[in-house]
Image (tube, rainbow, N blue to C red; front, side, top):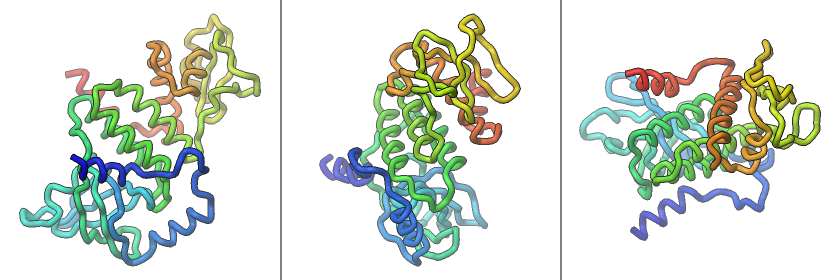
Length: 278
């Protein structure tokens, strides 16, 4: 147990909250390191994999110091492969790779342990988070803050806590880390959000005050359904306990993420909708 906890601590290590995220110089250094011919024992997770040739796999990974990295696991589909049983999503592993091309060659993978297995809705939520990372993060761009938030999400999903709350916090953290932070305390005109007022919210303009009697107003430029000022302020505080806040924040973040994906649907969301119709 002590070894598992120590391994998990190594995986979840990130910048102290009192320090700023890495500046441009540090990020450039990390990118240069990514192009090196050999990287050893890098904590990370498998996000997605697909077959390559007859016996190999292309693996999209999310690593602590190098962000999203694609590697080829040669012979991974063979019964005797050293990678067999290790390259599954949501298992913390230490990755070693080599190569200077965009797709590296996976040399070794070691299981770090320390995570509870995910089932049911928690598993679907984790696959949804993985797809967000694949779709929104560029390869080779370090995101230490997002890595820490992802580890916290998996820990929350493995417990009996509210899955929707964990997902909303992860979505907000991810958007902020990639430069799409939501302006939740001020409306588009610059005035403070009024908890008693109603707003329309879009990914490019933020919140716009509307008439309180217009409950479901949209416009052609992408405004979502109306959202209460109370919900916006609660989202700013990362407080999703109230049912109205939980419901409205889910719709709002769905609209914002769709905006940043240029309207392209998420596969996991479509699968979930299909399952609900069975």
